[in-house]
Amino acid sequence: MAEQAPSDEGVSDPAAAPGPFERDTQVQEQQRADRDPDPSRRLFGATVSPDWRAGRGPHGGYIAAIILRALTVTVADPARPPRSLTIHYARAPEPGPVEIATVIERAGRSVSTLSARVHQDGILIALALSAFSVPWSGPELAEIQMPAVTPPDARSEPVRIVAPGAPSFVRHLVLQPRLGGMPLTGTEQPMAFGAWLGLAEPRPVDALSLAFYCDALIPTPFMRMDTPTPAPTIDLTVHFRAPGRANGSGDPHELCLAQARGRIIHEGFFEEDCVIWSADGTVLAQSRQLAILVGGSMG
Image (cartoon, rainbow, N blue to C red; front, top):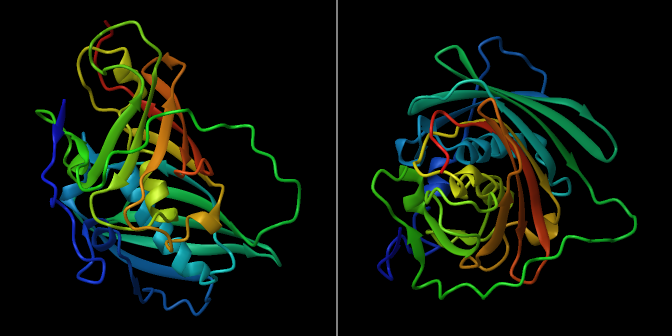
C-alpha cells in the first residue's frame, strides 16, 4: 500500500556525508594476488549491504550499480560513458565483501569492451559484459514517446510503497505510481506498471542510478497475481541512451518516469522491458531482463 513518508526522511545535505546508495555502491581497488602488471586487468573490493535486500538476496539493480562503478573506474575515460551493460546473475551473494575482477577486453579508437566477474568466498556471483564509447554522428530519431502522466509530486512529500513484508531496498526509493492498476489484486489487467522514480537521498541522475532504476519497479507479473513471491533476475541488459543527460550533473531532486511491461510467463520465467525518461521526455535508458517467479498464483 502507499504511505506518506515524513517530509525530511532520507534527505541530507548533498555536500555532507554520502547517502546510502552512494556509500553502499563504493568499490576499492585491490592488488591482484598474481601481481599481474597488465593495466587492462584490475581487481576491486566492495561490500554488499543488507539494506538493499529484495526477496532472497540483494536487489539486482543495486548489484548492477556496484559492477558498473567498477567498470567505469577501469575505463577511466569520461569521454567514453557506458552505452550497454549485460549481467548474468549466477548466485545471490550474502551481505559482506565481494571481489570484482574487470578486464578491458578491447579498447578501440572509439569503443571499449569490458568484462567483469564477481566472486564471494571464491564462488561466482555474476558475469558482466559492457561497452563504453564516445558519441558517434548519425541521424537522431526517437519513436518512443513518454506517456502523458501527471507531474511528480513535490519531492519534499514523496509517496513510498510501504507494505508488510516489503523488501528492505524500497526504503531507499521514492516511487510515485502513475501507470497501471493495483498490484496483487488477482485481477485481469495488463502486466504493465509505471511510476516516477528516485532515490530518497538527493542525488543527480547518472548511469549508476539508472542501472538501479531499471530493476526497481514492482515486478510486472504482480499486476496479475494475488500474492507476492520472490522474482530473482537471471539476466539484465541496460542500454544507456542519453549519457549527456545522465552524467550526474543535474538536479539532485529530479525524478525519472519508468515504465515496465511484461508479456509472457512460461515455465516460471518472465521477461520485462523497461524505459526510463527524464521529466522533459528524453529517453535515458532502456532495459530487458529475464527473471523467475518462485511460486505465487494468478487470480
